[in-house]
Image (cartoon, rainbow, N blue to C red):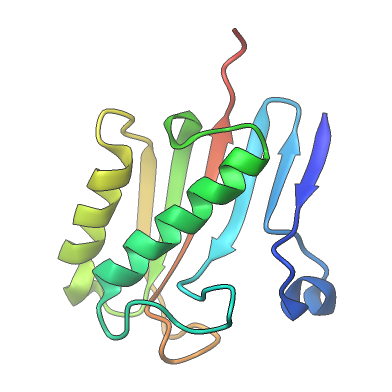
Length: 129
């Protein structure tokens, strides 16, 4: 199986990428930010709130590929300020408690919009029944 999921943003066409891609039992979700379908940033200056919204977007992309949060084996979080990590950690725990994927978090200088505080990507493996 080779499946691509698109969210419809102009950036997907401009940059030539998809929101998520399934190749066999593997699912990869691209870097995801706290921008809703109307193009608005969700969560304001609260990195934890942005992370919670992002995990919801990621879950939706996974579902479109036939996966679930429980299939996630790796998360990568790119934050603009590590001093706000506590809220991110709580959001990650809420999404993945008991799943415990391998996780990476790094501080970066900036994202494409200065109001975006975090970007998250995940990899998943769908278990064969």
